[in-house]
Amino acid sequence: MKKEIADILIIGAGPSGMVSASYLHSQGIRVMVVEKATFPRFNIGESLLPQCMDNLEEAGLLDAVKKAGFQKKFGARFVKQNQVGEFDFSRKFGSGWDWTWQVPRADFDMVLAEEVKRKGVDMKFNTEVIKVEFNRSSSVTTIRTAEGVTSEIHSGFIIDASGFGRVLARQLNLEAKPQIAAHSSIFTHIKETHRPKGKEGELITFEVLDTGVWFWYFPFSNGNSSLGFVAPNIWFDDFSEDTGLAMKEMISKLDFYEDRFDNYPFLFKPQKIANISKNVTQLYGKGFVLTGNSAEFLDPVFSSGVSFATASGLLAAKLAVKQIRNEEVDWQDAYVDHLQRGIDVFSTYVKEWYSGNLQKIIFHPSPRPEIKAQICAVLAGYVWDETNPFVKKHAHIVKNFARIIEMEENQIKV
Image 1 (cartoon, helix red, strand yellow):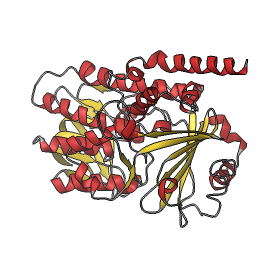
Image 2 (cartoon, helix red, strand yellow; image 1 turned 60 degrees about the horizontal axis):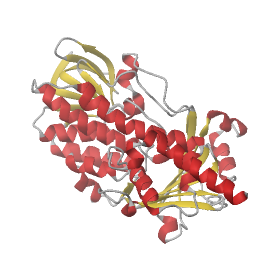
Image 3 (cartoon, rainbow, N blue to C red; image 1 turned 30 degrees about the horizontal axis):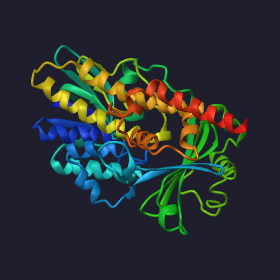
């Protein structure tokens, strides 16, 4: 059996894996990437956050993405019947990027992969990880190509960036109960031949049908748009089993986007993902670390997936370099605890979205500018900035402001 050697093996060529690979290569690390799929391939997570721009830049990938011409994203809008809450990233609290992109993931991931390959990283597509065996100082990973040819990769460390493939999480029995309640999602793309010009054809929008049920609209620069619904699992029981029919039935319930998408055929049969939230019992072990969705996925409502994927991929790579060079690394403090602080913030906002508390703040008719700016910074992905009260006090501040709004509403009624 053929044997290959790498300092670090990366499983998965999505954004997390590519950020890791690009950074490691820049540090002179002999890195190898194994990806089960053939690119380009479809994936969800099409709306980025400004915070991930820092990660792409440090990994040396930002310029390649800029050249791709993706639709720029300057903020986001939430609508519910006649209520509108709109956020402009340029008016957020604190410093940082005030724009990012909304992207067809097949194209975005391909841009990253091609740039990493151009840099000289060894990339193996259409290749599946069959087994991973760890020993004292290294690991042996058995891989198999689509043609059935097996070989071994001997590496000193593994970064699992396999996303929803969750290679090590499944092999090592690391799956855990998700932090977020069971939700499902259904989505597709359309080609908008008569898309409105200006904001209506550029701004991502979330339409709330009910407190726990919402729809997304992401327009892309190529004329296609992503449409999707997220709701508790039981909500989907009221619609047809066929996903194409079900998607049409759900679209008919839209208020803000009434009739807009009726005449557009779906570019692919709507896909449904049940129980979209994921979690693990541990993020690292002897000889490996989990990044991106292979570690945890909360919920698509605030588009945190790619932001956390790139943040964890970059941090894992930095720490892995130290470990390969025999420097002492405290993975619990430097990786797990750091990431968990950001995850906890977003987890609070996702939970309070579905509780209705955050929606009360977002849809307040006369929001206080400083409060809106602080929430906007969270929605931009700057969830480690503890100078922001809505980050530092996230555990209770959303609930407290929701109660104040309730009290104001009750006083008006009286």
